[in-house]
Image 1: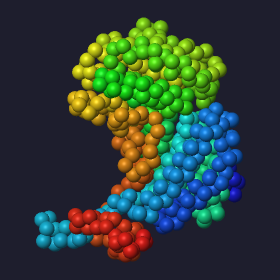
Image 2: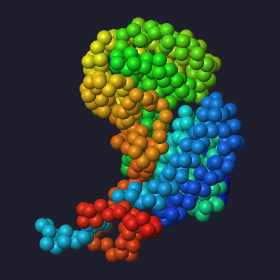
Image 3: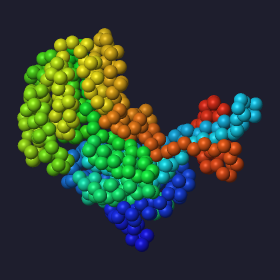
Image 4: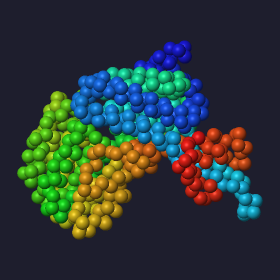
Length: 495
């Protein structure tokens, strides 16, 4: 039976079989050294790179995102895997801490050692709009494996063939690198997703998708006798503020950047600028009309997304809260056209419930103001977002705007555009509800923290400690001892 389940895990099988394999693999995955886990991640990256041509062909056929964009996404995906290999080897992610015993302290202090340990099997829900970077071998999978957790991916229905092909590559690469069977598995279908978060062996779930989808999964998790962490990336408006000085100094470049950003990937990025505060008159600028008219028609990711786009735009237009200022209405099927709708800040304050409803696709809402001093109050109506952007000149007062953005977003962008998320140590891809469900990032090195939990060991004999918490291992990793930060010498390797 387990042999059959192993093959099912390669191509998308029953949840019970796949999670059983994950449960069997968990002790070995947890016990694997950091160097071994880094080797697993690099093996997956190498295998995905080697298969890039075939994978891009499948992905383009299923998602219509274009070969150039998809090749870049493959590079981002394998770069993430290699980044986490380095994170694991460097070791600071463990947050290792040692406090020596002190009988003279009040109260007396025993020896305490603390570090982060793997949660256990992680369920990863693939996203539709990033078929590589947020999918089967994407950042969630990389972070969880790096942390020492088996991964079961629920493939997205928008790219099933790609999900299966990628899963085969990941499974084969892990096997060749010596990882235990069950360290990675794939399941498919809506019911499989529900069954996955119900499975007792699953200890956390990472999700990128709609608010409705997330709420369904959170409801299931709440019914568990032992609810588990749910790390969801959901909806995001991503407000932008453009000051009068910025428009006067570089209006052409700002309009170019806006149109490129809100139409990138057919407007299907989670960081799309969906709400833009601009000085009065910008909505009727002919340059905006010309740039939107130049954009091609977009084939969206799925029929469901396409069918929702035209009604979403119609709600904005027909409600009377906004007017179309650039672009044309799209049909309920087939390729869609970019569109800009506009309103004034007074109407926005009265109808923000309608104007802030996310519309997935190439559309953005301009809100015209008479004084930039009006904008902070309007930003208070905006729900939590992944990003907030400000275009301003050096001599303009921006403190109130920056403060308002900081309250509502996880990343504040200055004089740029939010689409495009660097995969680095310092990145934060998250934000207050409903952007995400936690305080953690889902992109970058520190996203590994989602799949770890702290454990303290009091007066433990060395043999009973995790290998990374013993003195010989601590000599090779950054850690804190008796309150002081200790860094390994450059001549010492990792444990």
